[in-house]
Image (cartoon, rainbow, N blue to C red; front, side, top):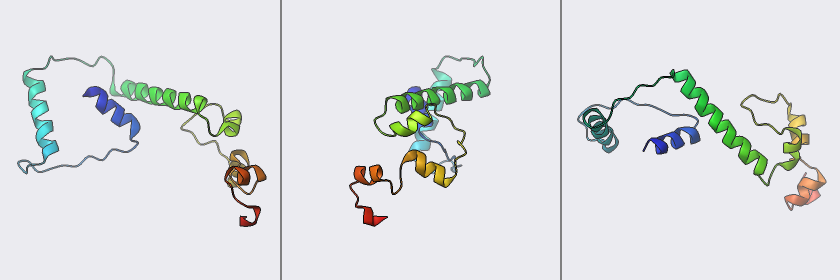
Length: 122
């Protein structure tokens, strides 16, 4: 279950938390309450020797590593990969025209051919 939660957290950028009234009958809340009770009564206590910031940094590093592996082994975006081989959360600082030119997503003959569009559409 912990791995499922970690996978979920890595794949979703935004997480929304809501407060639910007690005794209302929400299945997810009841399940969470049951798991919390089991953890208190049956689980082994453990200590986190590292601060939360360390955990966040590790998760971010793992996510960037997976993203980099996907970027390196992907079949699309190879011309952009040649220019920007490393992934990053920081914007590259390109303006619209530079982005169009580098990605090749504009009225360029190569893009039109790949997209099976005729030149008159531009």
